[in-house]
Length: 141
Ligand SMILES: [Zn+2]
Ligand SMILES: [Zn+2]
Image (cartoon, rainbow, N blue to C red; front, side, top):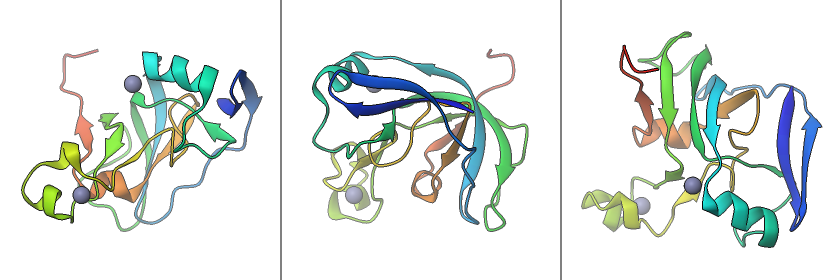
């Protein structure tokens, strides 16, 4: 499959990569849309202290589930989903107070995990654990 990988500031490449393999607590999606935002432009030019290259970029992700890990419930192939970009830990004091957006332990798609500038992407269990996979309503393209 094709991916867009960040190698270094100013060095972003379209490359061939093997399809990823989801673990038993992960979900795999076929990416149908992944936006480029200002952060992606900044990363491509200057890098980011949370990205250890090479890394598949892209964190504004929507797609369709193609595989569901054996230990995952509530999802099935064909479900249309949006994936959160920043993933809170779900267990720290801020998260337990419902303030997940200021979780100090956040990790992110396209930073700590390979992102959505790819034909297929693993949605890691970290996303599922904090309800970060959102169903796209019927009637919404
Ligand atoms: Zn963004
Ligand atoms: Zn937290």
